[in-house]
Length: 168
Image (cartoon, rainbow, N blue to C red; front, side):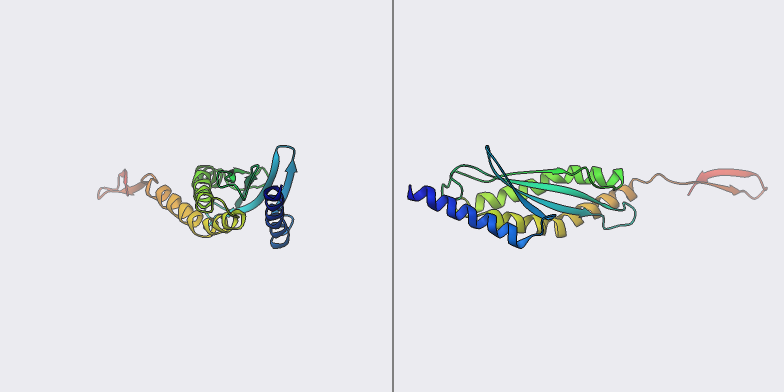
C-alpha cells in the first residue's frame, strides 16, 4: 500500500509542476480511465519568410500504471501536428517528417530517467529540440530546396540580333 501512495504522490507532484510551470494553452493534463496524459503544445516556427508561419505540434506524454516508482513503467511519448495552424504546405511537410526526431529524442530521455520522475526532463528536451534541432531541420530543408531549384531559361540576342534561348 505504501508503494501505491508513493506512486500517487510523486505522480501528482509532476502534474502539479506542469500546471504551475506552463500556461493552460501551453500544457495541460488529461485524466482518463486508461491513464493520465500530459499534453504540451509546441510551436514549430519557420526560420525563414520563404516558408512563413508556424506549425503547432502536440506532444503527448502518457503515464502508465506504476510510474514513476516502477523502473519498467516508462512514460509513453507521441506527437502529432495540430489542425489549428495556417502554415505553408512546405513547412507542414517538413514538420511531419521531423516529428519522428522529436519523439525519438523524448523517448531517449525517458529511458535515461527510468525509475524516476521524467516528465520535466522530457518537456525540457522537447523545448530544446524546438529551439535547436527543429531550426537546423528547417535550415537544411531550405538549403536542399534551394539546391534543387531548376536552372532558369533566359532570352538573349546573339551577335546577329537573333533571339537565342539558353541556360543561365
